[in-house]
Length: 191
Image (cartoon, rainbow, N blue to C red; front, side, top):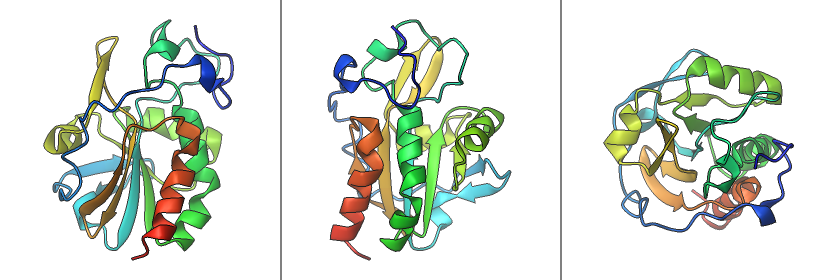
């Protein structure tokens, strides 16, 4: 069952992910010195980003008019919602910055070219990082899922200060509320 709208799914018909403990080790971890390419073709090393940053990860965005990765994508807990999650961060980007986030990054295991299409189509004002080689994913032991022979990130959001992860949002559901949850946390925990 693939719902027709990428941006406005009916969350009551989609199973919520459960907290499997796969992100419990991340708080207090330093980002590794791994260079990732972003959608501006720049190399980003999260451990070297000054100040407070927000990194939200998602399995994969879809493309309008194209068949999903699997027919049962919506029934995989935590799979559906990458576009709504990304759009929520887009819509709150200015408020996140005002609340102390020096930078916001999206993150997936999709290629930079694939991500660039989404950034252009959805008018995303921040870079999206590609971990197609799974270097960051493996170094941090980020939670993943295997779907159709692909390793995909489970949805989560990280707040980091000077390269150290200070807060983790996991699991994330519904995805379109993730940015608002991050914003509320930033306001309650100023730098």
